[in-house]
Image (cartoon, rainbow, N blue to C red; front, side):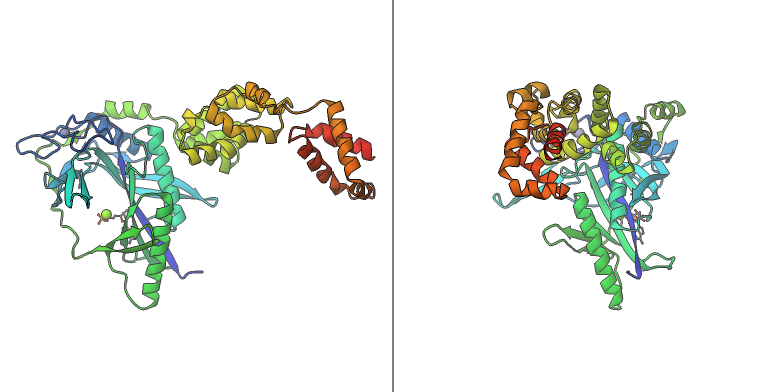
Length: 477
Ligand code: ADP
Ligand code: MG
Ligand code: ZN
């Protein structure tokens, strides 16, 4: 057991799913040709004025409402000044002293332990562009398509105590953003990115230790690994009598290590000040009430409802509500099946989710629709196919979009329930294995499994197991 406690606070940037940028009407479409989505405003020409995209305020406020933040009726845009080629104005428009949302929280659960993580603030800001370094051209290029794309930054209190808690918190945040439909959550494309502030302190000590800020974390796995590495590094330092220094560190994906990017001395002085080009944002009560009324059922509420109305365990409810599309798929399948919801949950969690994860096909686009999954389950229930055959057919049905009944018929997968046919197979198996038959009769009833396996092999998995069991028992009694 370590003598040290881990302390983590996270800063998350979520790209908002608006059609146009935050302060101009340029498109936010990803993947266009470089500098296609650029105008005088977002390229930082002198003499132009930014105008706030109303949707950005709506989305930021909705995230605040969904996380129990106070919504500031007046908030202020500020200039964060620094020089970088991808920032044509020489400053980023952000919010500083008066962000749109403050003092919220997100509830998480790790290994059965519930925990509340405080949100310090949520503010709106514009994204910067992208530098592209080309070895082939021996040159660097600047693409301003992303300049001015709207972001919210969600800053947590230093409330997390392990890498697992940090990941649980991030998954919950991402899930809320997706439920609200305000961010696509794509971590590889950078629509959901996170900086992790990590420190350690001896258990029992109240004062926080010096923190390092980790950057370049673009998957849950990397976040977990980077934090674990960083904690071990800091403990080693302290145990050796050295001090942790405050700095920004980069995670190296290949090595699984972190290395210093810049120290405190090189930290920017951003010289924040209110942006004189933008009036303070004043939110009317009626808008806030409208936005509140538009909030969907959020992941946590859905989780509780799934446990209560479908009798699901905590773990299944969690799996099925993580993504809205999966939750919707599940409920549609339960509706079409009109049988035990728990069975549907097993197939969705055990078969559909792995399929979606491996192939990248979203649940809502799977060709085995909820109605077809229900039809497949009914084929299992009425004995047309065995569970095993159903599971075997699952992937094919996801790919082909065939009707399950037609598919199993065409593939000759229909279960053999014809007693005469099954009896012939049982007789053959018993005749081929006389010593096992002797042993069974002598009390080794565990051999039932062996006989069953042989019949299944003979029938290529299509024998109705209930009938086979009965036949074997009859013949050996
Ligand atoms: P900055 O603006 O320099 O990034 P902030 O004070 O806004 O600094 O903190 C940023 C993040 O760092 C917050 O999420 C906060 O919870 C976290 N944090 C602050 N102090 C610590 C610490 N000692 N250990 C871990 N995280 C910390
Ligand atoms: Mg920071
Ligand atoms: Zn523009």
